Image 1 (cartoon, rainbow, N blue to C red):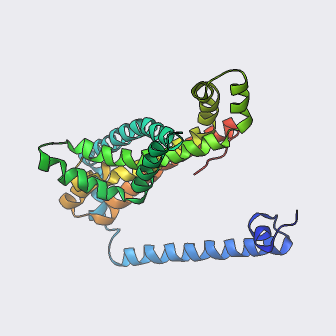
Image 2: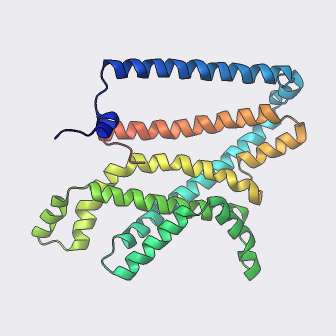
Image 3: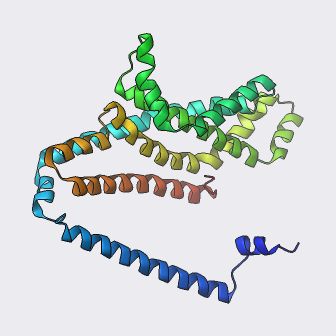
Length: 272
């Protein structure tokens, strides 16, 4: 079947002219980004941001220890939210696929509402509202619960996409062997679904790690909160933020690299 012009542009193999345009565009973009980076470095240098007094704090062990404590706090929050969200996503996915229409509508409404609401708003909610009813949450749970809610809603859709990716003939074959709908789902569909979505589940951890940075709102001692404390004590804005950003980039890259390795080993593609 012939492709439309739009389909050829999006999915067709580029010809010689298109490849030349891609190469030229990439080269021009690289030069522009390099020039922009050089301009930023020059402006920072002119404003004295590379003076020793702004960087000498990193020679002190207590600064790295404090950053390390924040890093551990970030890992604790991300691990807790990620672990709970794996189960929460399954619960929402089962609700979304339920044959009972009211349950399906409820699960769909919850997923769409949570996905459409900023995580920061949920954190403010759990920071301000429960205490009005005498429920006092630790700062850990003020971060973990909102991050878990959002991650669960996203994972529910990831799981649902994985279920849809399993050939329909698999469930039909299971039912022809006398399995019930639940048995075919448990023994045939779910194992294949998990093999498909595992790389994407790992990738979702990157979003979970990033969302933990909202912990500063409730003064949870994660890395961003500890970064702000260091800046307040040493009056060194750019260097501290730059080092913290590099740590986040290294952590997120390690997670993404793991997801790509899993995808390559399993012969699957990351869905989101």
